Amino acid sequence: MKRYLPVLILLTAMSLLPIFASNPYILHSLIMILFYAYLATSWNIVGGFAGQLSLGHSAFMAVGGYTSTLLFIYLDLSPWIGMFVGGLAAALVAVFIGIPSFRLRGAYYSIATIAFAEGLSVILETVKEIGPVHLGAAEGIMVPLKVDAGFFDFQFLSKVPYYYIILVFLSIVILVSWYIERSKLGFYLTALREDEEAAKALGIHTQRVKLVAAGISAFFTAIGGTFFAQLIRYLEPATIAGFDLSAQMVFLAIVGGLGTVFGPFVGAILLTTVGEITRVSFGDAIPGMHLVLYGIAVALVMLYCPKGILDPLQKLFRFGFSKKNGVPFNPEAGKDLA
Image (cartoon, rainbow, N blue to C red; front, side, top):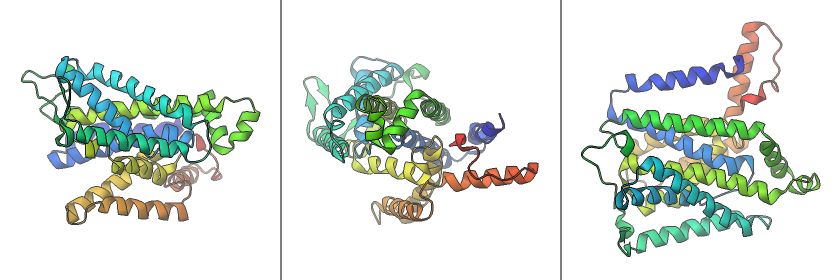
């Protein structure tokens, strides 16, 4: 139980933050930190655990966001239901992309995800309507606000409910990642990530394992698209399906700790905070400045902390715990917190 104490303390502290965050801007920033942590953790299932670099992951978020929003507008279907429809649609798309690309080695999956994301972005930016369904093209679509909206409609006048919803979503995807890491699937993913030929020699069906990881990752990412749509109440193709968002997921996971359970969360806290400070400081004077800083952070981490920021933080915590309890410090102990 002691090994999970830091996590429990952190979750308790985070659940109390809205009480002290009376400033709407601070509350919105906290929501976005948790949101990006959620996306990075979702990406990490395929990019970290399976070692398959997806550079077009924002497309799955767009699939989820547009699917649930269109179902909400035209069928009056609750976003809580629509998010699962969008999640399943994104998972099927991920499997469809993975079937041909996972048969090949190298960067084929990365190229395939980029191609799909760019293709989807072009379609969403150019197609104004499909029959009676209005897509808005580059202008995007507004999520209608119901007068009598409530929990079932996923719409709230205050931002506080959104904070707790994304905190629950993040907790769920972290628990799923924790379970995957310790399950048979996790062992299979680790084996193929380290040496695919050796994994095949052990009898692991590597393509099937990759497809499972890609489907799970896309499913959770798409659910994030529904949350984003209801939070912002506006979907713009360039934002929700753009390369910037995909790159951000990758950067957060790498900086925090690729292939670890809590690494993307740590990376999101660090880089999203830096990005927000940069946005406030520079505004729109230097577009994409946050991505430049992310790139610098990735370079520094790869040079000095190849395993991510989480690794030295864990060692520091274990050192402090060992010193307090008078036991010898073992830097390799307690790795299951990763």
